[in-house]
Every structure is written in structure tokens, then in C-alpha cells.
Length: 204
Ligand code: FE
View 1: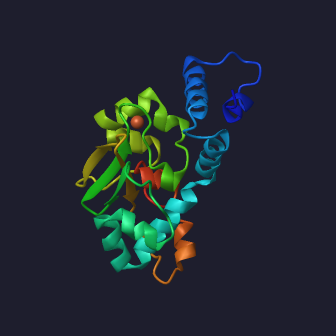
View 2: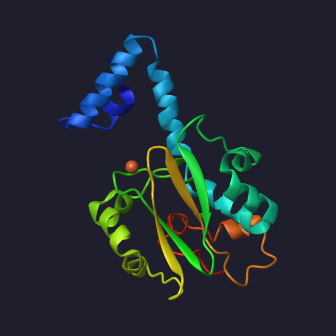
């Protein structure tokens, strides 16, 4: 058995059922010659390298370039390819949704923890919590208030439920007073939470 990436993290603690299952599946796939331990490790490393800074760069580009924004909202795969970001070949698909004066989007996965990892890295623990998954749907404004955010009273709040096949990234509203800022400066205003939709972007 060569599932070192899993075993490394576990040390002396007994392995959970899920961990045991994943180690067994990996060992089986390796035994059948379908993948190697190195390939698994490479994927784990690739996942670990992704951070919300990737998503922030994309948002900043969309704020700075209307043409790019239109392409991003219409076909995220080819727009992201322009920036050298490659989405998985088939699924999950990525839909980018734009917050406006009138519509605010909040992303959740009610079933588990589906998340646009390709642009934001690993999800925060609260995103995976039962409390968030239930309350984001029932009371998105209440959840946002706890994050210190308040969309306009007359804005429609839309909650998007992620799935294994479809992930969502929120394009937050560009803050006022950011005219003339470079893309890099703009990216500094784009937080992970604003791309999940529980807050807006930072003010300059
Ligand atoms: Fe999920």
C-alpha cells in the first residue's frame, strides 16, 4: 500500500472510515495500474497550491476589462483559459455570477461541500458546516449580517446550490472609488468570502 499522502497526516490516530476507504480505493487503482501514488500526490499538491488569490485575479480582470467580464459570465472555461487557468476537462462546470445593485448571490452546497476549488482552493470549515448549509438557504441575509455584510434592502438575494457537476463563483460588485487602480491593486480588494457571496469586496 503506497497511499503515503493520506497516511502522513494521520500519525497514530485511528483512521476514519472515509480515510480507510480512500486508502483502499487508491491501493486498488494502483494495483490495477490505473494510477500511481506519484500521480495522486501530484493532484493533491496541485490542489494545495490553489488559493483565493487565483479567483481574485480573475475578478480584478473582469472589473478592469468589460470584454473579459462578458466572456467570463458567458463561458468561464474559455475566458479562464485566456488567463492560463485550465478547468477540469469535463465536470465540474463553473458558472460565474455577477452581483449588481439589484441582485446579490450567495453560494452554498447544501448536500456536502462542493466549492470552486479550482479558483479558491480548499473551502473554509464554516462553508462545510451543517449550520451554514442550512441557514444560508433559509436566511441568507441573516448569515451575511454575521459576516458584517448587508446587501441593499431592495436587492434580490439569490442562493445558489453547488453540485458535483456545477460550481459557482461570485463576481462581487466593484467598490466605488477604485477608478484608476491597477488590476493587481484591485485584486487586493477581492476576498475569498466576497467570491462566495457572504460579503462584498473590501473598500479601498
Ligand atoms: Fe458538495
